[in-house]
Length: 352
Image (cartoon, rainbow, N blue to C red; front, side, top):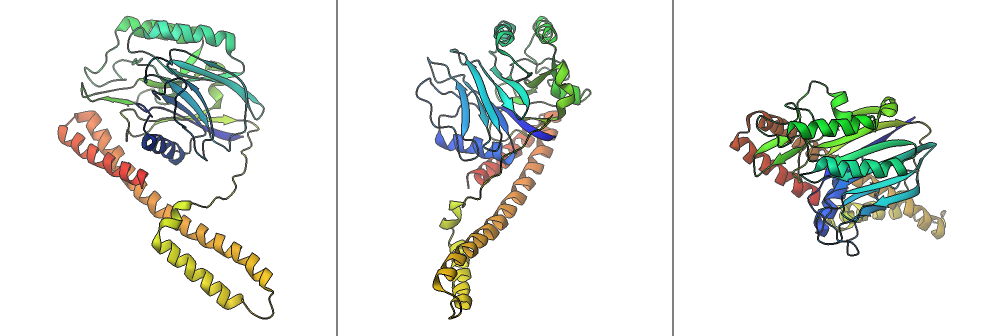
């Protein structure tokens, strides 16, 4: 039994390479295995490369007319997912991917619903899903509606009318889809989106699973809002017989651009050759063994740098989470100003 970590996040457009890198770094920091991305803003046929060594596999549903909408599902390289089929939407509103993870058949559905006529769009998605799905269904994304009022928005923050919420709940109930976060947090108020225009918080991002898959849900959490106006939503599922592939060591090439790192590695090599380049050891043996020494030095230095960076990142995230919690309750402009500064520090550290 192993946990599969899913992330859903609205990223507000990824047409800048720097923003693609920032998003992928965020998903890796959160240890995401399967990533649901909304608002990629990729135009059909002209999307930039949204992948890296950690996330080499991605499936996309783009809007062909303009750089707007768009959804994607990414898989980490260590996830042994075997694809069976994909369904895309020419309007860039949904994406369905099904296949095998270990011995478990899963259908992943990523949605980005419009800010009006949400139930009409969801009905279309669920109708197509009924023809496509196999195994367990995991549906996630930005639904642009707060389902549990008044808990899902601050006072005066909700834009959805009661009839819309009733219709939405009926559609979910008919397909026996359960809101994972609300199930895990029945009495908690928390939010996934901050509207700068209206200065209001609301919960409009979700993960839903079928009723029969509830025993697979280990946790569902809302992360802090950092560089997007949406928070990442984190879902952990327990899957039987899930075996992750081993990751081969790769040199972090950024270490080569650090003068202090180069100096330490050079000193280690000089010391190694001084101690081992002797008459009783053949030159070939000395040369082959020095590669292990070099690798060990880079691993040690990379680990130290990662620990320092992680400690600073965790400190900033703790401060951001605490201040965001305060701002969610008081909506004080000074709290928001300090939040903006903290998020800027996080962005600098992420891009470093």
